Image: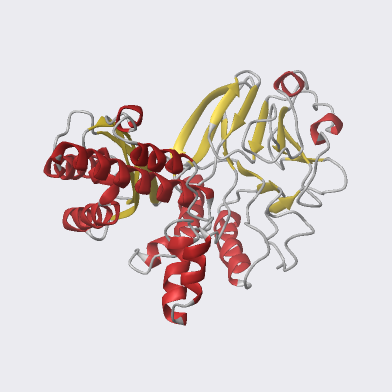
Length: 418
């Protein structure tokens, strides 16, 4: 019996998007998060006395800013070298051979698969054959697996592949492959990289994404790490155990406001949910986004007070544990209980205003506003630029929703007052 570890998408020294740009965020924990995950990976490999480690692409996140990235990796590899643990790795789209121009001599225990053609490495003491091919360029669109070698008889065969299996939505279609192809190739285990969500697509033979070792933004929630794979004496895959390695845990917490009637109830619920989320991350730094949902009478006031609401939530997070929680943001996805069609029946002016809201785009300023903006002092123009012309579709959508909610509330309030 022997064990090996399957890891991928380490993205060493990659910044954590949504945190690293905030001055108040815990900078050091964020800066070293991917290195911490790598260190935990190596320490875990040594503690489990694995026979070898495979890394299925995207060890790096592109060209190094300096040689510190390579030095950090080599330092960890030498720890494995001292423990007689070989490492087998392929390049992916982020660390393709043509993209990472800096290099350092690797320790002798690190074996890198070529990029021109697939190749096979034999483990020095075990009946194990490892097959793989790295990316020569970031945009590899051919099916690399179709040229992988035939399995070696009487050996446990592993294929390392950085791939978009089955053309998964939302991911670059690099080195595309399909499940039937991999299952039918004859290998015992396919160690896949590229998709950051772990998943065992097939068992015996195993086709496995380990996911990344450290979540890098709010869309990469939950535990991140590697698979510890146990092989029995009959060269069968006996077990795949997922081991968490991340030091910063992303969480998107939804709060249903349907039954809440005032801001105090909202903030009390925010406190309870943040506290629970912190208890679930086992001492890690928690990077959390709150998303408020539900049909609620609070819809308009929440949008009108969006900035203050975010500040209140951030203040709550600091009170709970200022060193262990960072609030990434508060998203509003609530729905109004007001009926615009009913409000439009009040009078023609109200109908005209509500009709204009349908086409409101904060990035397309009316001419009078644009002309007025030109007359403002330079400092004022700079300060307004982000608010008046948000840079992303999401920002434009949020501003439009805020404006719509505020206007609806004003119309409804005016109607009730009259």
